[in-house]
Every structure is written in structure tokens, then in C-alpha cells.
Amino acid sequence: MATVIRENIGNLNDKLIVNLEKNDYLPSFEKSLKSYAKSANIPGFRKGMVPSGLIKKMYGQSVFTEEILRTVEKELNNYLGNEQLDIFAQPLPLESDSRMLDINNPGDYAFAFENLAFIFHKQKMYDEAFLYLDKALTITPDSNWALFRKGLIYEEKKQYEDAISFYEKILKLDNSDAFAQHNIANIYWNLGLYEQGRKKWTDTIKIYQQWATAKRPVENDENFYLYYGGIQNSIFGLSRDAETTYRKGLQYDPENYSHA
Image 1 (cartoon, helix red, strand yellow):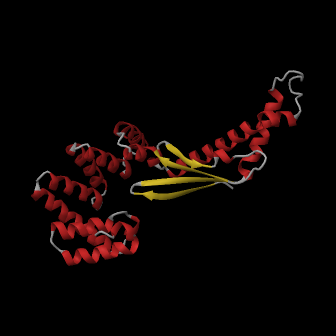
Image 2 (cartoon, rainbow, N blue to C red):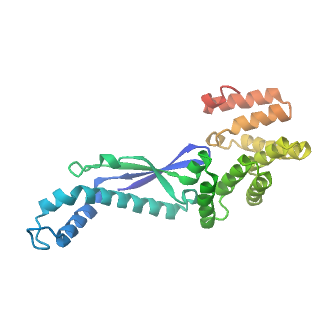
Image 3 (cartoon, rainbow, N blue to C red):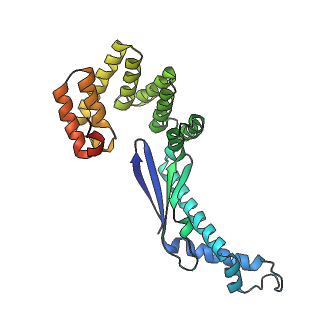
């Protein structure tokens, strides 16, 4: 039975893995091969009378590959529709088993997909990233992920008013979103608007404190302890509190927090 697994592979980025078993694609492959046999025009044979072995030899591998990829696409689209995953407005295939598909040795296969907006953002292809983020927002106008990603891109482009507007949209939906608060505070601070920045930092650290007190599963939020400790140390001068925070981060991600 086909399954789709969702894996987090980085900050605001997920990967989907579609796993197929033989029974997921072999029946459709056999059906397609019979269809080819009925319609094939091969010299020396009447239409519909071509031996199945010859059809398989001539077209088998391409039909085999086509049916597997079609099954993958169907399972992926069903999953995206059922889960309403706006971050995968158009997923991009990653490394897969497609080169290993062998009609003579059918087996189980896995195909991985990553979201295109994240990839284009990483490559600083901002217009292309916006294209797919806007598609995601068309599907889900209140998508925290897409709004935050657009804010990040505008911030990188130094279009700070646009960046703040997208972070503020997130806060209207959820005023306890510490990461949106954090980024607005950071923009104000970098622009020399220290009073406004300090106010946002204060709001941010209150939320971080609530998360920590509630034993929220913050280990799943990349850089949480780094941000929290940074505010404690750099903005409020709470060096001992910051040290405690960084040590907590070390438990979850030693490599990321080793320099803190």
C-alpha cells in the first residue's frame, strides 16, 4: 500500500516521501501494456495481434516507468489535497529511484519532493519564490508559512516596510507568534529605532518565556534557544539566563549551539 511521509529538513522547509509497493503500480502497468498491444501498428502484424512478449520488449520499460511515475503523482496529489499543505503549492522532485526502475525486477520505490518556494529562496531567486508563495496564499490566504517566508525575503531585499507588513499579518492571526515578533524587533533595531525595537523584544521574550514554562516542544523549532538566549544576553544583559538557555539548546542541537 502506498504511503506518504512528511519530514522536516530545515527551518520552514519540509520534504515529502512517496513510498510505493509493487501492488500499487503493477496492475495499472499490465493494463497499460495490454492497451498498447491493442493499438500498436507494427509491420508484419495485424493491428491488435502483436505478441505480448514483443510489445513488452519494445515498450515495456517506458510504460513501466510511466505508470510508476503516474502512481507517484496520484498519491502525492491525494496527500496534498487531503492535508491541505499550502507549502507544497508545487513540489519539486529530489533524488529518487527513477533511474533504478527495472521492468525485469519490479520492487518497492521511494520518491522525495521538496517545496519549490524554499529552494528558490535559498538560491536568492526571489521573483520565482514569490510566484510559488503567492500560489500557496491563493490556496490558503492565512498560511503562516507563506506569509513568514515572504517577510523573510523582503527583509533580505531590505524592503523593511513590506517585511514588517507580512509579519504583522501573522500577528493579527496569532499574536503569540514569537518569530514574527522577533523579526520585527530585529528590523527596528537594525534601523536604529531602539525604542520600538526594545518594545518588540519585550513582547518576544514574554512569549519565549511562556513557551519554555509550558514545556512547549520547542526543540522542533530550529534556532529557538539561540534566539531566546540572544535576546536575554544582547538586549537585556541577562548573561546568566542566556547561558542557561544556550545549554538547553545544546541538548537538542549540539552543532548549532556549540558557538553560543
